[in-house]
Image (cartoon, rainbow, N blue to C red; front, side, top):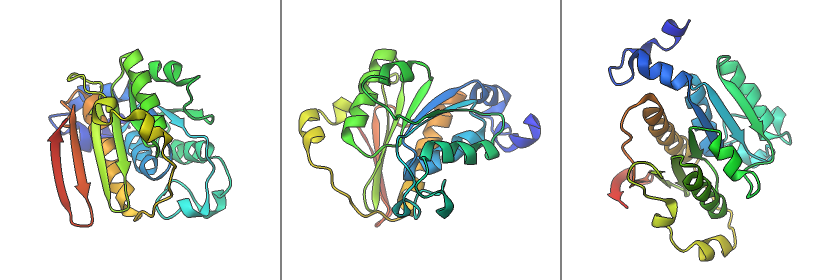
Length: 232
């Protein structure tokens, strides 16, 4: 089943059998199971990543459904972590799923991050991203950053070989974390595109390929389809 299931990945010279075995032995902490997580989580599980931490304290709401495709109408009001685990387990029985229903907190961040090889940011607020940044720096773990706007998104890889951190890109921590949170509209396809890019960077790194966004920021405007990558 291993050879048949992952044949299209294994035939890639950049992946091969060695890369596929790397994926099977890898562990990833996903922080957030919303729009971005709904694309990242199935992509990693489907590709054969061996262990996924599903970290989100929220429940499914009606307003989630247009872009958070992990969930169904029948699951509204139920914990995202449990619903995601059930859906993903049906996709990949070989993957171990850790449900972290309390989310990422100052009390558990360093312990959680240290127990995974890589963190993928699928959250929606500055405070959590700074928490990821601090915990990854303390544990020596890289992390894939992703954020979205109504029609646009950003992706980068922090705390890897170039040593660039999220705080390098956004040094105004106090101002950003204290600003009132606003609920913005978003087109459903935007997190799917940005999440797919995040998942691709994660899989490249885990399989032993050279990631493209180490210390670089990808900016993608889906309204105009303009895309650029800049050094941080």
